Image (cartoon, rainbow, N blue to C red; front, side, top):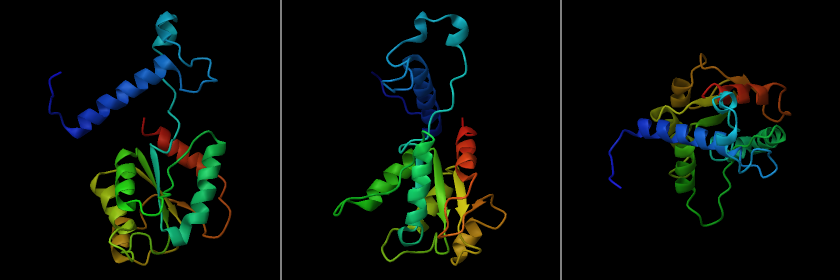
Length: 195
């Protein structure tokens, strides 16, 4: 097979279209699904060309970016609420000795949407050479769609204030409180808008 050099964005679009097609002809991958393992080639043409439903959020498609010491409890609540709705998101859990930077970069690169848990020091340099500062820079540089959950009145870091100004669309969530009603619904709607 001959290799062809195509732009990354074009390759991503082709792969997304392939994945949507495969999902449509193979079902949603759920063994309990009536469509699992079946092909729509034997179905009437009217159903064959129907618009596929929005894919579910998964650990591969949605990345939660947060300061561990500031928003881990809330991120766990959010992940659990998404799972109750049949969705999911990646919340970094790196085993001791593993390369957190490598894992985070791989997951961020694969993500179709990033959830930013915007606490006071989000985007500020961390105590190591890798933190939400680099994550935010990558998100913006790669033009990753993001969903901001603002958990403070004002960011402490000036670059974060610059990159996520008050005019940035967000949903509020006061740190230390239960997940507000409507956050999961808004997140699902944002995800659907990407397709």
